[in-house]
Amino acid sequence: MRIEILGPGCAKCQRLAANASEAVRGMNPAAEVVKVSDIGEITSRGILMTPALVVDGEVKATGKVLSPEQIRALLRKES
Image (cartoon, rainbow, N blue to C red; front, side, top):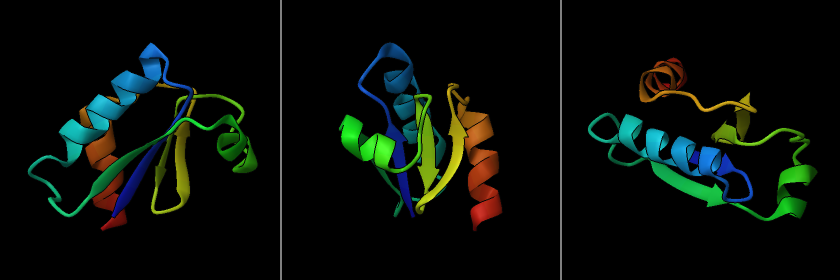
């Protein structure tokens, strides 16, 4: 499972990345959390609001910081 956090590196982006890491810890050790900060890459995916959470190539949330619990709930739906 690949989880991407798309954003320029702002405080909200950093918080979402930390929440995603916390969410997968112990839940899916094979999951990879990756930060994408290249604006060209972000806009090429159609993202207009950051931060964005992408799971296995599918955009799950934009413009908000999901809690670890909310991210876990999304990941359970994916598995």
